[in-house]
Image (cartoon, each protein chain N blue to C red):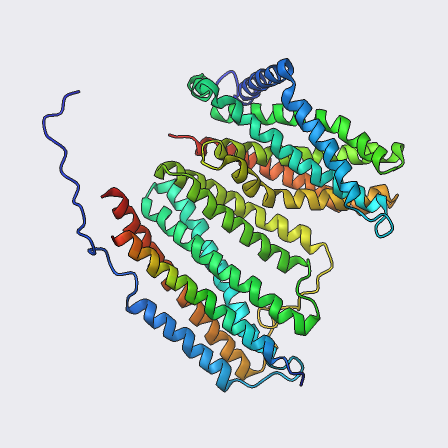
Length: 232
Length: 35
Length: 236
């Protein structure tokens, strides 16, 4: 029995890779700003597509957030592996003495932090644009958004790694990812509309459970699957 | 009994077109690859 | 490391040496489908409440079952490929995927044509319809992914990963959409207790299921041979 179980080494390596990605992002901040602006634009444009007499803001707003969030997430994710294309940085990562799962986990952690940072701006923005009660909205939407982000990032990071090596990466990434986003968007929207409307928490709970189950299943599945996308 | 035969015919014709179209596409692709 | 022998020349198949794409099996399968069709059209009574449109059931549900059949083949072959690295498994997965997309398209087009006179709506976002729609999307994504990767090994790896993840996705879509109210009629035949179709219609239905499943298998085989042909053409 070795002195170190494999798990701490894996997490340490993942965190190292995550820090690298975040450091790159912090230095330029361009992707972050683009995604934030895209999200805010999306929230604003959806407003004009909506007839306020037909649907109440409280019913519409969560859905708008999740839609915009999905597409903004895809944009951010596309760049996640795109960044490695420069100077064949990916080869260096593969030669490095880290488990391949750590490459995936590191990127996923960095992407989750990135998405969480975007949400810090987007969730209050939704509340403001759609005139929702702040004290109720922000914790409810924020909490669900975080859970949704984990699932979104888990799947999107894996597909981004695959898509980056193909001919139509920008089209392929949404095409692969969006079917997987459906349970996330559905469960998030259902849970958040109930919470925003002040319904008892138990009603939203089954949807939140689906969200958590999805996160666990796909975080594990994608971590296990990632090495299989690389050459032997 | 309501007269829903238009739907009945439409569905069968459409299914036939789809299946037939696929078989045709197999033939056409085989021709292309045999050259 | 020095090698003295030259590698043995790979035998190049003469053009037309592959097995024919359209052979007796496919003809037999097509005849089976036509036979089922004749039984449906001429020898099965109309249903009282739904009228002629009810007969769409005999092609819609068998197409759905064949879709699941083809998708199962595709998913299993993807796993087999990851395990055994046999190119034949990958080729079969591709063939099954394409056939699955065909049958799913039939399901999604005949379904609304049936739904409109029966429920008054072309489409509802209930559990089963939505799941079938997303099966269509995922299968289409699978085929597009394959088309976007030229390298054989990478293509097979990526396809296998997508196939397995998609299999994990199905229960989630089903579960989450099922929590919505559903309008789709309860299954008439595939219930644990006795089916509620009268005997004549049940026989027609079962014959149709068999005919379409056989047709799906024959199409998969034909498509597999096409894939072989294409590989040979590309190698030449």
